[in-house]
Image (tube, rainbow, N blue to C red; front, top):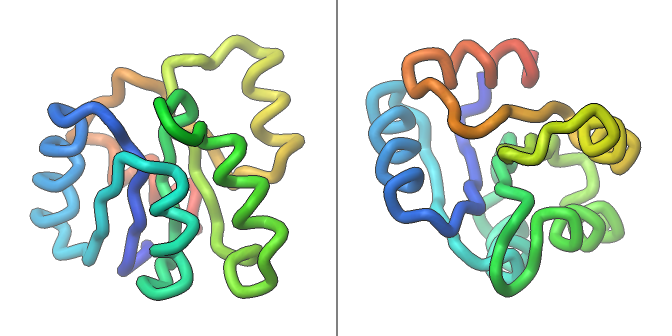
Length: 121
């Protein structure tokens, strides 16, 4: 299970749910609502996992993922997308891009940690 998670999510209610879940599990986390900030913060925070929404206002998760993958310092950090866009062709695109897994929204806060454990290993 990851000990440090960097989250990209622009919905404040989902941010609060994630904060609650991670605090209950004693997981260090850093929350951001800006894809550009996640790219910068990944270098300094050194997360074990990045949990990203796909649809974001300034820089979407796919663009942020591609930037992270190009940097040798962040290219090995596993990324999990969290999105409501989970049609089969969309899921295939995400996996082709190199994400470690996809969690569908809305997600169940009670099973989120179980899902992350299954994906992270």
